[in-house]
Figure 1 (cartoon, each protein chain N blue to C red):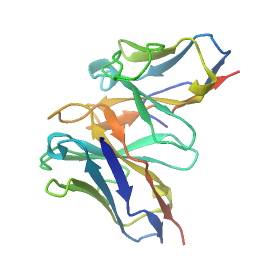
Figure 2 (cartoon, one colour; figure 1 turned 90 degrees about the vertical axis):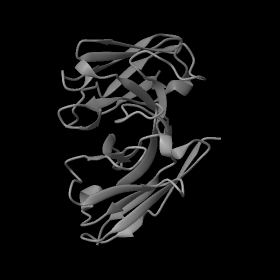
Figure 3 (cartoon, chains in turn cyan, brown; figure 1 turned 45 degrees about the vertical axis):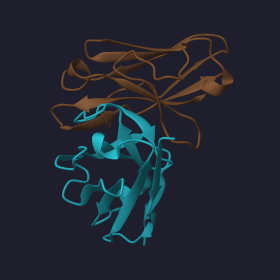
Figure 4 (cartoon, one colour; figure 1 turned 30 degrees about the vertical axis):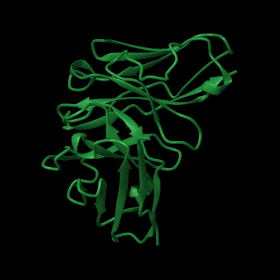
Length: 123
Length: 110
């Protein structure tokens, strides 16, 4: 079964850091672009960042550029999001999502989503 | 303010049909495929439509998609109470070099 499982969320103070992980299973992880998408409480979806299958190319939303870093370890089938200088407005459920097509970059659709991990930035 | 514009809410009676619009620009919808997602309360989004009008396996043909110029539309026929959810359009924006979503549309089946 194709599955994504996020972890690493929690409560962090403004200015703090957190690293999210997304463990993938059931597909050839290195062959698919991956993304992080977040959803603030009661709000809509916001695309955050994407990484190519090899990990050699990345994109970021302006709202997180310079503060967040996406990476992947294809030997561990795991996607990461390092979040630094966190702000209250980063409070959201963070989903990892699998790009739809084999070897596509960038991905314009996501066919598998994790269950999400909650990040709360508050003092 | 979302890059893609959707109506905040739509409603219709069980068995009826509803359409949800998604408006963008030449840098996103105009030159890239559109996908649609269904998010039931308390759950992760689910892919409903990709490449403007294609359905993943397991998605009933009650759901359809179309695109014209810089706008896209999701259609749902034979509405069921289980279709009550938030619906999002999404695509890639070539100018922003990033993914973009609509603000979401809440469907109420009266």
